[in-house]
Image 1 (spheres, rainbow, N blue to C red):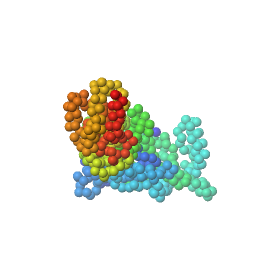
Image 2 (image 1 turned 135 degrees about the vertical axis):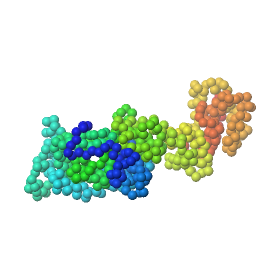
Image 3 (image 1 turned 90 degrees about the vertical axis):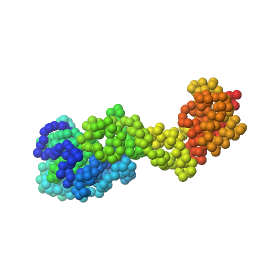
Image 4 (image 1 turned 180 degrees about the horizontal axis):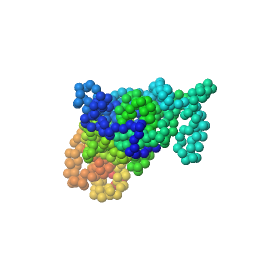
Length: 541
């Protein structure tokens, strides 16, 4: 229940929007440094929204590390990016999920300075803080049963009021509490929310946001089983870890009121908040599985480059004020600022990501791309032997032909698989091939078959000297009295089974080299192709 307002209050935290964003950071920031955190819940994979939050925090910390290095000799200032695992939801948190999130952060290149700290290992701290609030009367013991709470909520709903706690324990005497304890009753700890106060934060992205405390009932900070509640853990941890900035998704904005109240009660200054807008699907609904890949791990599996995904995620809600779209990690660190994050929701556009990934693939050194593809093909079971001499020959030629065309790394397998297939019969039956057949395709086909099976010239060339294929083709054209399209298109169809594709000689070269090391169900070897072509010539006579 947040609303914007210009009102302020006695319990108010605010600071100027660009407190720590300008090139000359204030003295206070230089002393304290900048401390930010990413705090995932290990209940699933690292979603792109979480990855963007992690990225913005990482960039902010790295920016201030660089500024501190430029303005001092290493003393004071600086910055830290802290990783905190919020695993208080015992039922849903798993070690596998935590490992996956950490692995994906590393793959993206978001290396943290401290942590990972786990809330599940910090129970004593939460208990101590709850005791402190009880002693100061900012909290109280609540012995209400679940049934009583449900009854209160239903009554409030019937009266059209918010479900605010109205139980007797807010004003119970010590004697009444001791009486319940003597009966062996368990209690939750409730935070005592001050009445009729306005709480204002000055959000780096949203500006001033104000809440009236009357919209919030006394809320539980420790459950009756002794476990702490999420919002309490977050506030205590951010205070204990001395966070200067909390950059997170706007879905956490409603939690901020509770957290600021806890800060105030503990006599601590809240951090500077920045709530980033959500990432939506192209239809402006919440991004979900039905829109395709949504987690970092899925994009990695689909063959996207980490640098491209980082660049794309940065632009989902931030820009540097120019038309620039391609940013290296160092560019992003230098140019990033919280004040350039937009208020409006970002749209996740897979086409734009594809374009960006293709640009990054094009920029790769050929050797680097070849190594990535060898690793991928081995991992996917497409390549039998990474060390074989022909592997580097094939990959060098493949990269030369396809680097400009690849959108993802995985597409390389599909592209190569297409080269290995020989869809001659379906091509000959197509309308597009009709003109070529009428123009003498089978004369060329017969020449090829004779050269392979009778004179053996093509067989020898394909197996031992595929580089000489172009010369052979020109000589064949002279002998048949054919040139240009009348020669090249029939040759292409006979050799590859297709009417278009990369250079025919290069395809013949790749097919021959691939025979011993590529594992593919669609693979038609050059000899098998010649047998299919021979049968097609016989059937045509």
